[in-house]
Image 1 (cartoon, rainbow, N blue to C red):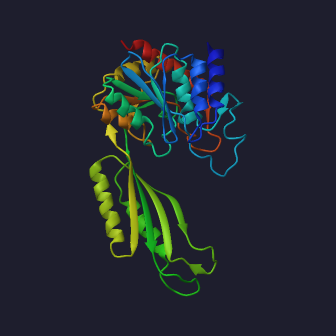
Image 2 (image 1 turned 180 degrees about the vertical axis):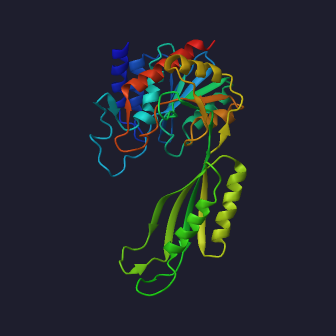
Image 3 (image 1 turned 135 degrees about the vertical axis):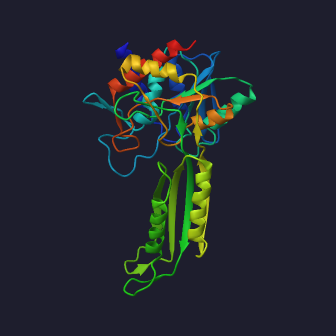
Length: 349
């Protein structure tokens, strides 16, 4: 059993899955799992694999990953290598390792796999869930393998997610010579943004993720400054207050802005499967999980709202290397996650 799981893991992780990945990856998964009834749903550049049967629960996962950045890896990004009982591979934590743990459950053939979660997330899980609703399919539980664990597998289980807002700001100033006194649009804008960042709500995140300005000339300050911001929030009221702060900052200047609502916040208060997954973690790991409300956005936000506030939870690998250079996970941790999911599945009536 352990050897077969190891072979399956290496097979799956060695497949290149950068957005947007090719259909051949899904075909390989279908062949390896010997699936008979399945659907490959393609729209634009997005490919989705849908497997459903008479069960009333669905596992939702994504196999696309983010860019690797400019820092070199131990080996090529998509080459899975084993080093000191660790599996080093892009996306092994988020979330191909969790998907492997789920797919190896021989009795389970009920899942959605997409390659559109790290990108626009329009034609992935959101699109598939709408198809299921149109077909009048009823499901009571959606769960996923997003990396929720902090120090050991199962120590945190998520039943909610913060919302996500992206702001694109353009500040207009006056170009000047660096040797003479005058207002620098970069200094002015950064100071204001730092002030806004200090006044956000508890456990919410305001991150500047992209800055571009100037013409590359050493002795000249720019007349235009581009900033991209990501804001993670818990409640819709907070985003309204945050917008007001941005408006107050922008209204006196010749500035431009655009915002994109990229993630819906949700909290699954009534969850009838929490006790079962808690007991499964306690049985395998001998620990009691905590409810965690942090992290990024998730495909489950569509499942929760579109399916009339269905039961949702996430349990996955350690998140300490997620999206980092040489992203890795212990092989034992992936196998432990498999055992927890197996115990959970056996407990569902």
